[in-house]
Amino acid sequence: MHSGHSQRIIPVLYEDESYIVFDKPAGVLVIPAPGEQKQTLVDIVNRQYAPAGGWKLHPCHRLDRETSGAIVFAKGKGQQQAMMELFRGKAVAKKYIAFVHGRLPQRQGELRSAIRDLDQVKFRRGAAAKPSVTRYKVLEEKKSFSVVEVMPVTGRTNQIRIQFAEIGHPLVGERKYARGKDYKLRFRRVALHAQALGWEHPVSREKINVTAKLHQDMEDFLARNGN
Image (tube, rainbow, N blue to C red; front, side):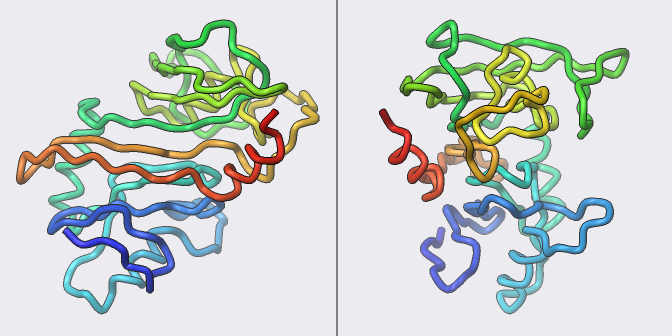
């Protein structure tokens, strides 16, 4: 395992012969979106690794454009498929930190709803809706928002953002799912950070745990609004 590749644009949190976990910056798409010309995370990390040779890096899951934190890439298609099977089988423990508006009615709990696994502007329910489960625990309560540890059990598109908005506590910085409400507390992006990933390595069977420190913009927000 190698770490501390400081010369690279995207920091590396973990690396072995099969996988690399990067610390994704907010504002970067993982893969291309229709009509988007901007560089994606796939472009950037493959350019960084081009001289190292021989294989191409493939993302094993996705994070929203605005979400920061830990994301796994595979060194080849076979390794990608093996890791994606772990994600599909709910064998990867995922932990996020979110700032949500207001105070939640319970300090910890589970959000359950049926949502469509599509990137829609509005909530849309119906035959294609799938059961979605998110567990959470409130870490801190501030004056107008809460710091929440979030553990999604399922992996629908925008699941965390949608489910907290559905219970009337959208994430700080949320625009898409805030139902038009204008919150005084503002942030330049959705306040969501992929803090930790844990899994059993599909080749070595070693237990892997990777942590990504909260990014500076969220730390600064806490410092400004921490009372």
